[in-house]
Amino acid sequence: MPFNPEKFIPSAEAEIRSLVGKQKAIIALSGGVDSFVAATLCAKAGVNLQAVFVDTGFMRKGEAEKVKAAAETEGINLRMVDAQRIFIDSLKGVEEPEKKRKIVGELFVRAFEKEAKSSGATFLVQGTIAPDWIESGGLGRDTIKSHHNVAGLPKDIGLKLCEPIRELYKHEVRMVGRTLGLPSYIYERQPFPGPGLSVRIVGEVSEEKLNIVREACDIVEHELEKASAEGKMEKPWQYFAALLPSKTVGVKGDERSYKYTIVVRAVKSLDGMTANFSHVPPEVLQTISTRMCNEIREVGRVVYDITNKPPSTIELE
Ligand code: XMP
Image (cartoon, helix red, strand yellow):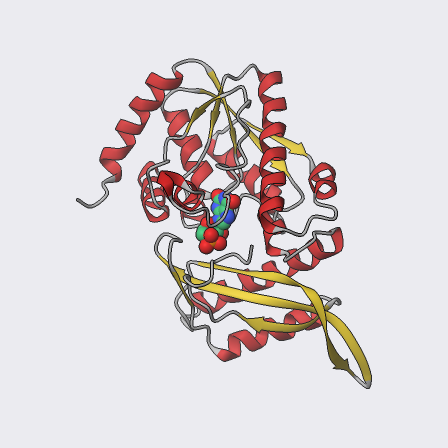
């Protein structure tokens, strides 16, 4: 039977009401479609909700400001927490992807615990969706990646969980968002991983690398959205840049350069469980490459990722 958002919404609200009632709840509002839909369902169910945006330092360009503005428009009570220093420092010397994910996930939950204590909340609302827990080893499956809102969750969290969209896939969450009347810039927003740009830097994270990948992601988003709007290509399901840890040799003028490589990733997918790389026109890739090498001093090479999922995953870590 096809998914019906009209049926899902009242039943989700009823479930939220019977689980949380009038108790206070907090939610991590990252600005992505999942957390926004979860927050809106709770708000509609009459939950006393405090939304919190933790700025991990792994956010995209202008993201904190955009989320703040969107929450204001939707009348969501949002508190901004600047935790950039703690998160960035916690990944010093850490190269292994699963370790990075676990550290970020745990810090994230701890940051919420602190907020929850001061707010008196007893529930933690999360925008967990089906691929998050399936790929984190749910139902006896192998762990592909520990999605940070699942495996990073410590046992002693001290908050009860409310996950109203846990059984849904991404396209279903978007349908719910649309039916709820959220603005299209929320429900059409491309997915962004919980650990943010930290998993778009292969290997150790540093402030320099964060700045590089942030600018690179911004260029990819801008150019692919422009090309799609101009009808040059189908808008990919997800599109971003990632930074490789090693440098390669290049030439600028008469001089040898030795700079970082950026991977451009754009995929077509329905739910993120499988994906095919997007066929981006060569002239669009050329513009992206030229802009990156001209505008980001540390970048000397740009490559396009032509692997599907499987065998690859969408994110590089
Ligand atoms: P992968 O890289 O596993 O990603 O093919 C599938 C989809 O999930 C997103 N993703 C995450 N989402 N927390 C999330 O909420 C996470 O830790 C996480 N890691 C990956 C990814 O961007 C893609 O859309």
